[in-house]
Image (tube, rainbow over all chains, first blue to last red):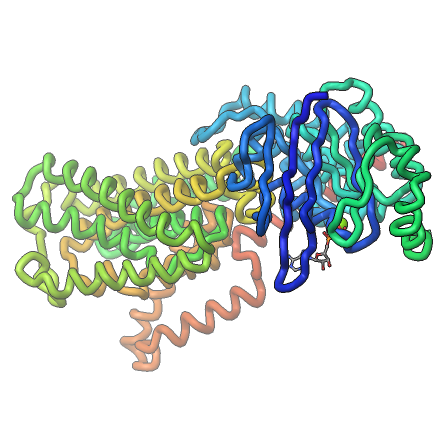
Length: 254
Length: 333
Ligand SMILES: Nc1ncnc2c1ncn2[C@@H]1O[C@H](COP(=O)(O)OP(=O)(O)O)[C@@H](O)[C@H]1O
Ligand SMILES: [Mg+2]
């Protein structure tokens, strides 16, 4: 299987605390891979390392066989890596449309244009509206992001990610804090992307049913260490995982 | 849809600007408005940085001074000629572009707050050079270059319209710039720089563009300013208070509204003039800074988003209420 992203012995320390500890993993191209693990296991930190917000203390990251360890975030985005954030991270005083439009603009790679072009403007807007429809947020198209509810902000976050049309989609708990009625829309959206089989998806998720339904591969992280990887069904039956993770999981999240 | 959100304000300003000279031939009044136009250009350039990119500069005056000294020195030492005027404009543009790039590269890589510090340091550097290089600049006294200015530019009536047209052109270009894809990214940087970077925008390059556009436009306003006084002196074009003026004009008009800067420039300069006139009646009015302070506090208290910003907010509220009313009408019928 072809590998899109590879981490080799990646670690990061905050002060004396090792948040990610010698993690080596390979993300196969055009598959749905998930990362699970208890709170504070280092999952979001791992995403920050992948998307370039953090530099590892040691280790190497390869994307399509190219060393990206020292690349700044915008260059990784240009290479085809897009991410959404666990704690919503949008442009608060811009409308939903303007938020998504920026992502479309980046995706179209139109560069430094100093004049407004009506044609281009409409093209960007139409695409943005399409993605806003995809996440069921059309009613809020012209609202400022700051006025959205938590669940709506999550949808906006996902619309921004989808609009980037990245090769690699990094999703950090996309349904966290959403109301129960809103979750199926997102799962369906992810299933749809998965079934098209033209993207590589890396999902951080807690919800067990979601993991089982979506994932083709599963990684388990605990205390910054990768403790299991492979087929989701097999992993969930693995006694080590159950002891280290699922025990904690039940206590913390059930 | 958003094209000329402030159309009403814009048309009103346009009419006042165009027609004013038909109602008065008082030179001081024309000159006052000429300077309002010029400082409005300066304030708009500041708004590109502060309002659209979210970067504070404490030394924006240096570009203003670069423009002012370019034209003054070239005319003073090169003599009256249009070639020198154009050459000065070219030099001012190139020099301010280079300086703004250097300043940006030195500071914007790190943190936007460093930009404030570095611009302040550079502005002081220019200030000191203009003071000390006496053989060229006549130091503190500055120099008059009235007899080297082409007659056309010395005519208060023509120069009024030249400044007005410059304001319209710069306003138009900056407006286009803020609506352009590049301008949209600047706003994204203001809103959430890390996120803009994660979307794939090289925020450093965009901030450098913002810094350069603001610097070049400010230098153009400096050129016009020096011509309007026919004099240049280091305190008047490199002094910190001009940066503060730009900051005040932008905040009073409305940060991030572009054309608010024109209103801000009008208010500040009219208030300045008004207080200067009142000083003939009572010396307390010579302490105009006190009154500026009070005016500023009142405006920030009652119009926290500036005058045009507040106006837009109410208009927006009114419109969305209207949309909702229309919707409920449609539903009930
Ligand atoms: N920027 C940071 N500075 C210091 N500690 C951090 C930072 N980011 C994360 N951590 C710590 O790293 C650990 C892993 O956090 P995180 O990656 O957010 O966990 P998860 O996403 O798996 O819940 C936590 O103990 C957290 O406190
Ligand atoms: Mg997390």
